[in-house]
Image (tube, rainbow, N blue to C red; front, side, top):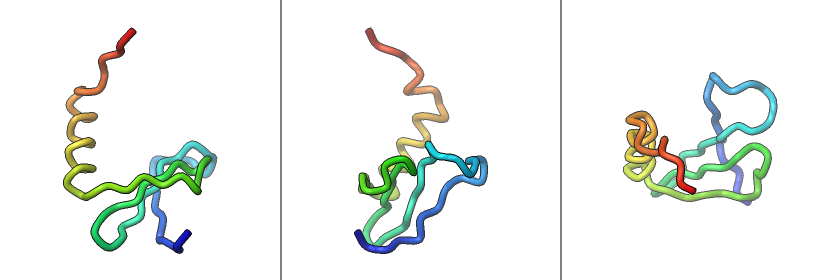
Length: 64
């Protein structure tokens, strides 16, 4: 895996279970600190839309 400058929120503790982001050419890589070899790739626009939906409560509903 290429070396990236992974960053996590300042609200995250030094423990595990943190979402980390890295800016790369043509996008953003995301991973969970517990599974560093599993990387999701997205665009800034898609990530921005996802964050807005979370903040607006658009993903709060649970399904059975």
